[in-house]
Image 1 (cartoon, rainbow, N blue to C red):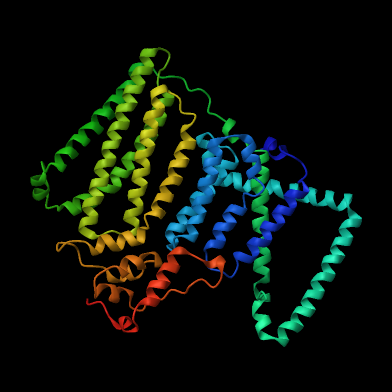
Image 2: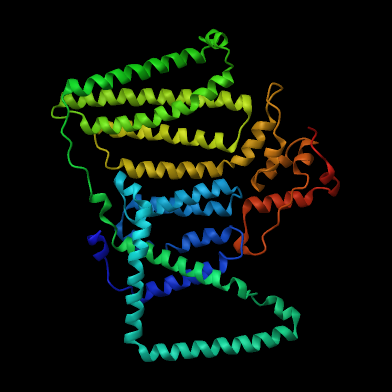
Amino acid sequence: MRAFWEAGPRTAPPRALVACAIVGLLGGIVLVGNRPGLGVAVMGLALWAVALPTLVQRRSVADLVTAALSVALLAVVAVRDAGWVTGLCAVAAGWAGAAAVTSARSAPAMALGPVSWAAGLARSLPWLGRGARAIGEGRRGQLGVAVRSIGVTVVLLLVFGGLFASADRVFASYLPQVELSSLPARLVVGALMAAVTASLAHLALAPPPWSAAVLPQARAARRGEWLLPVLALDALVLSFVLVQVGALLGGHRHVLETAGLTYAEYAREGFAQLMAVTALTLAVVAVGARWAPRETARDRLIARAGLGVLCVGALGVVASALRRMDLYVDAFGLTRLRLFVVAVELVMAAVLVLVLVAGVRWRAGWLPRAVAQVAAVAMLGLALVNPDAQIVRHNMAAGPEAPPLDVAYLQGLSADAVPAIAALDEPWASCLLSGWHVNPAQNPAEWNLGRERAALLLDARPASADSVVCAP
């Protein structure tokens, strides 16, 4: 931490101060008093204004890709209205941004993303302060002239603008409306945005040394000591996968009938456990790779084979978990939570494939960064498929054996679901959209694709459609 605190340039250059001030001013204007939308996406890009040139100078394609994913994740706010989707994407954007700006390459460095943000913010404030003092001491006379000139300009514009606005309402409508009650919030948000911009810039100039911290080399276990638990676990996992293959072929339907379980109950009881098995498998592979004997080529081959079989078996477990969720969704319908856990399981499957690739050459230095990028891409994919609309399409397309339709749940979805509902046959479209109202954007900062599409479709509906009520 001492090395991190003392690293980097001591004084912020004038261009960095100006850029931070502009971003802070923009943030105070577009983020306060407006619904999340295009303004948040623009701010997500503006925050990188000072740090981006440093990232380009590094010539690290991986860091640039991760930074681009962070910007894209935050831009989801301008596309989707569902708060749970935009919230997940915002968290992923923060983590990806920290990984990119700090050039995180190890698992501890990735995990320390929030610490990097906090430490970078604390370190950047003195950096900005010294830069401001340097400008004030070096150009004290010019600074005084600039302050006086700006002050006189502001006073003149306020006085004459107020008189003109009171004299002509049409002219007044073109002037920006500033509410004094929101001024404190704008100042706080603007200062925060400027500080985040400075934090990104200073972290890019002097990244923390988290990635250089590595665990000491572990003492390799004896071959028999290491191999016995790995082979036993391999056998157990493969046995479970074979049983699941039999289940897919209907081989133990009679077992379920004897136990008094339906396929839906069978799926519900097992999915959470299989997710836990997948996560624990990744932990076992990590520990096993650390303690595996690798002095000879034969040792390395045995380690690859033992852990590789475990990963392949875990992929079979993932397939079984996804099949169980498919049965569960067919029986009880699709919801946000069920869609999210499917996305998590798919990410785990992708991580298992990456681990298999890393095990081929027994080199995993690139793996933590690749896992972070896969998670970011998964969040982007979740946003692009429009989950709320998919919930409507799936639940409304269910067959006659489907569960009773949860009308209240569908009506509680976000504006992203409106196009899918409007495409339904009557009277379902009218009854589900009855009483639904979406306010269009009041300014460009509030623009959101999901809300705009919903507002256009709702405005085009006849007024009589609002009186249609869904039958119980």
